[in-house]
Image 1 (cartoon, one colour):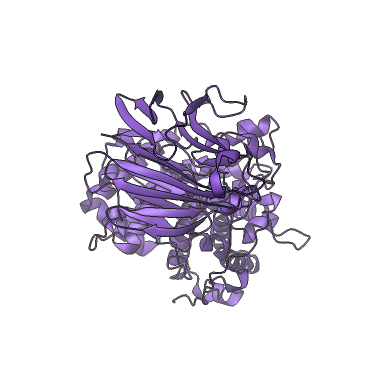
Image 2: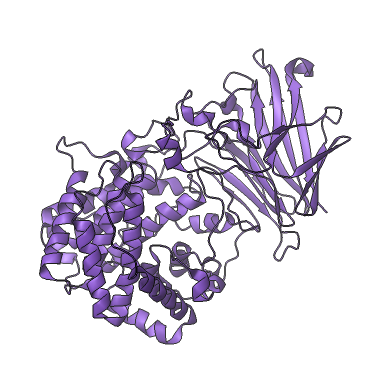
Length: 631
C-alpha cells in the first residue's frame, strides 16, 4: 500500500509550550496542523485480524528476512563482522546481574535502555543460533523487568523503551519462552505499558501528538507492545496503533523541508532510531509502514546527519547535542542506505572495525542487522559540499572540497530558544580548520545533575532558570548580544538567503531575537576562500539600543595584534581580523571556571568580544565584519 498524503501548506503558526508530560524545552514552528501530511491509517480490529502477520517473529525480522540475514552471514563481510560484535555483546550481557528497578533521579530510562540493548543482542543471537542458554537468559531478563511494580509512567520515555524491549523479547523468541513467562510479559505490556497511555480522564498524553522525540519513542514503544498483544486484546492493540499513526506525523513534520532535526544530531539518533524501528516493525508485521519511510523530509535527514559529523570527530553540537560520536558505524543511518542505496549513508569502514574496537553497541544494533542485510548499493550520491537546511532551527554548512587537506568546516544557524531542546544561540557558528575547532558551541550538560540540584531546566519562558546556564544562553555562544540582554526566548531567526558555489554564503535575519532593542539585524556568513570565513552583521539601531557586543567562544590562546588577534591551539594558528572596526580593541572574558557552579566547566573556555556603544553609531546603522583565516 502506498501512503496518501494531503497537500502540505508551509504556513508557520505561533508556538505553544509542550505539556509538562513531554519534558521538552518547547515547541517547534509547525505548519497548520490541519494541513500536516497524514500517514495512511486503516487500522481497526478487522484490519488487524486480517492483515497482521500470524507467525512470529514479525517485529523488524520475519521468516523471509531471517533467511536473508543468514545468507548474508555466509557472504557479506560487514554483516559477519557486525554479528560477531553482537555475539560479543551478548556474551558480556550474560555475565551481568539482572536488571533492577533503580531510578536515576526521576528516570528509569537507563534501565529501560539497557533492557532494549540486552534484548537486541540476546534476541538476534537466539534468532541465528537457537541456543537454549541464550533463550534461558532472555527468559530471566523478561521475568525480572515484568516483576517491576511499574515502568515509571511519570516519565513515559521509560515505558516506551521498556515496552519495545519486552515486545521484541516475546516476538524474537517466537513462543519458545515458558508459557508462564509469555503470559506474564503480555500482561505487563498491557498493564504497565499500554494502559497507562490511556488515562481514565480520556485525555491523550502530551507525547502522543507532541512534536519532539518523545512522540517518536513512546509511539514506537506502544506500537511494538500493541503488535505483541494483538491476539490477546485486539481492541486495545488496534486503537493504540491507530492513535500512534495519527500522532507520529507531528514529530515527522519537524524534518521538513530539508531534513534538519531541530533538537540536534544526537537527538536525531534518538528520535530517528525509534521512527525507523517503528517503520521496520510495521513493514515486517503488516507488509507496509503506512508511509513513514516516504514521509516528506525524513529521507533528506540522512544528509543532515552526515553533515553534522565534523572532520575533528566532533558533532556540530548545537541544541542539547552531545559532543562527539562513537567509533562504530551509524546503524540508524544505515537504514537510510538500505532505503536509498546511497553508499554515503553506509559507513562500511566503521562497521568493519575489529570487534574489540566496536565495544558496546547501540541498543538497536541487533535489529539493524536486518536492514543492513537488505542494503544494496546503487549509484553513489555525494553529500553536498555546501548545504542549507531550513525549518524551525535552520542551519547552513560549508565544507572543504573532497579530500580537503585543511579539513574546512563551518556551521551557522538561526532558530529560537523555545525550539525543543533549543538554546539562545541564533546567529552562532562553529568553525574548524586544520583539525582544530576554533569557534565552539559549549554543547549539552547532564540533565540529572541539574535536576537533582533543584534546577528548573525545562522552563523555557523568558525568565526561566534554563537561560542562566552558559550552555543555554546567548552569552555562551558565538553570536551578537544587544544591551547585555538575553535573547527573546520565542524570537525566531530565519534563513533568508543561501548561495552555493565556490564562495558560498548565507544570511540569517536575527531581528526577532532582540525584540524591541533594535530595528533590524542580519548576519551573513561567507566562505571567501578555502582557508577562511567572513562573519558580517548589518544592524539598524533604535532609541532603545544601548550597546552591541560581537562575541566568539573559543578554547584557543589569544594574542592581541593590531586590528584583531592571533589564536593558537594544538600547534596551529588562526587569524581573527576586525575588518570593520580595526580601531576597537578586542577583549577576552574568561569563562573557565564558568560563572555558575552548575554551568558546564570547559577548560580554557573564553569569549572574545568587541563592544560598540550605540551612541557611536552614525545614522543608526552599523556594519560589523570579521574574518577568520588560517594557513
